[in-house]
Length: 306
Image (cartoon, rainbow, N blue to C red; front, top):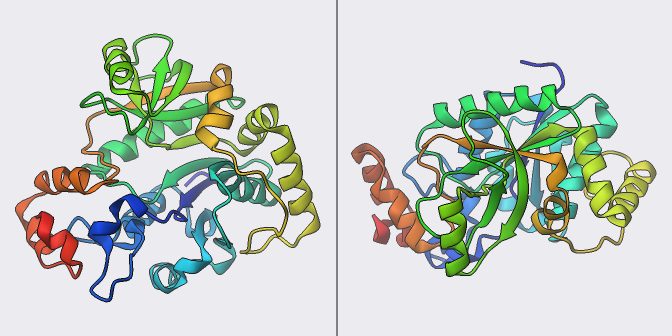
């Protein structure tokens, strides 16, 4: 495995849109990344398996929320505790991403980082693995740019962010014209017709590139985080500093198209399983053995959808 390749697994979300499905028998809502929704391992465990194919466990950092400790403490057994970054509260995706990235940069100035959300499902892991390898190579070839992965849309979805390339995307990374966050349906139809892609928020880039792109877009936030990193021991807890609540897609990527390239993922059975309808559609695509396991799930809401 490349010496300076790191994976950053994002597992701090609450998964509130899927709460009707992930509510346990005792009434507690379990964040979806900790649930076994698709008949096997949890979404977080699937993501960690994905990361293990790219980087060593010593170079895999996972961001979690303290309130979820009852779930992540079990699923991160055997992982280096120094690589578990615990946030006390949600401070927005910009801080949620940049704090661990700047921690990694502090530890390894030559780090290259693959950002992996932990609450998505991939039907074909080999396809996403091969695409990530191409994105890693593309990032090394252009170390000042970030590579974002794009999913070819199956419909004019207004609940996703969209990536608009400057020209048709083939097997190589293409320049990005702009990002569009959760457009109205009419706009989404036009984006789909133009060749735009869904954004699964999977990113690849040098740690320095993440830092520089963010510093140009949200300089005050980066300055505050760097001050915190310099003043605190680099450990598993978020710095106790005041940080503005900003969105990484909107406030960083949306202002940085000139430094971004998009790489399309071939069909791989991707789903964000973000709503009951999307989870139900995902479950329909599973092999029968996986569907049987899902029907035996401990969560009543999952059993009802299979």
